[in-house]
Image 1 (cartoon, rainbow, N blue to C red):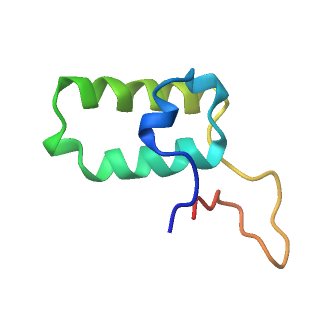
Image 2 (image 1 turned 60 degrees about the horizontal axis):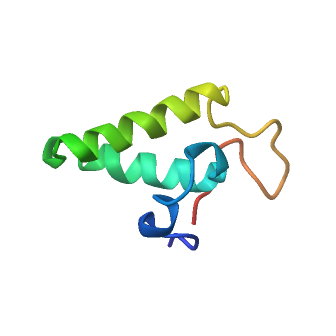
Length: 74
């Protein structure tokens, strides 16, 4: 379960100020709803993708015995 700021709060700040976990969660959520998004939703999703790309993608630098290499957003 996602624990963090909701889209209403995040829409008030720049994507560059979002945490990686927030970008990952909302990218995944919007990706699942892509066929149903209107133009505004597609625009928001595109901006999230652009921010992820500008950060060099979402990845952990290294794994250890308690964490994998992917970002957990729950």
